[in-house]
Image (tube, rainbow, N blue to C red; front, side, top):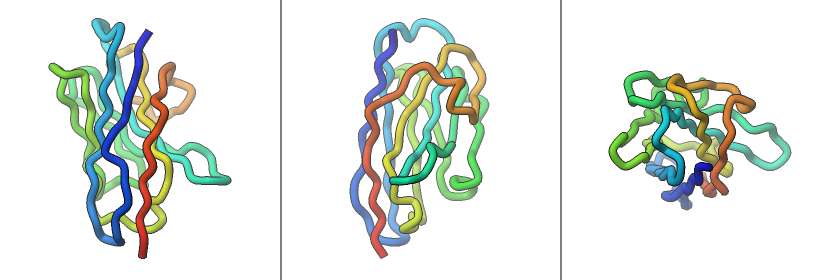
Length: 124
């Protein structure tokens, strides 16, 4: 099994920045792709960004293009979401997700493991 724990959420003003982190522990000796999703009340879970096992390949969702690059520290089984120019509509619970395999995916159903989530609140 794999456990995922996110950190770095918080409250910022319009135009601010945050960096989210997610650490994977447990059976991380296999190829393991990881990603970020977000969900706000009354809405479906939405793809933000994902990164492959080696860190060489990424997928960026429409909500993140040009603002939220994703990176990975393979030695520490950790991924990061570098959020800048945050807007009130980015307010949501952000979830880290993981799946065995090398390639990043945008699909919720591809992921087997989920963290508890961190809240990001952007005020105008």
